[in-house]
Amino acid sequence: MKNTTLCYIEKDGKYLMLHRIKKEQDENKGKWIGVGGKFEEGESPEECLVREVREETGLELTDYELRGIVTFVSDIYETEYMFLYTATGFEGELVSDCNEGVLKWVTIEEVLSLNLWEGDRIFLRMLAEGRRGISLKLVYEGNMLVQNVCVDF
Image (tube, rainbow, N blue to C red; front, side, top):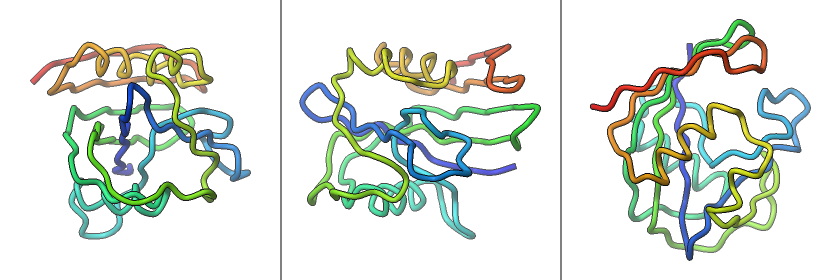
C-alpha cells in the first residue's frame, strides 16, 4: 500500500489543477487532479504535502488545511491512503514546466466538467460544501467506481 497527499490550491475562485499527460506509465494518465504525491521515508503528511507542491509547482505553501483521508481500493492498483488538503496561501511563482503534466488554474465551477476520476468528483463536491474531517473509501474495479463510503470524524 502507499501513502500520498493531494492538495487543491485555491486562488480567486479557481483551483490549480494538473493535467497528467507527460508520463507514459501513469495510472492518472489523461486525468485532471490536484497536486501532491507519494510520501518519502520518514515524512509526515504535511512534510510530503509541502515538498510535493514545491516540486510540482514551484510554490511554497503558507496556509493549508487537512480536509480528510481518502482510501482507494482497487483490483488493479495497490491500496492507497491519501491525505486530502486545500490551501489558500502560498508564495513564489508558478513553474512554467511541470514534469508530471500541465498546470492550469481552473474555475471551481468548471472543475467537475474535466476528465476526473469518479471518486474525485465525490470529494470535490464535499470540499465545495465546506466539509472537513472526511474519511472516504472508494472502491474501484478496473477504472470503474463500484462503491463509496464516507464517514465524518
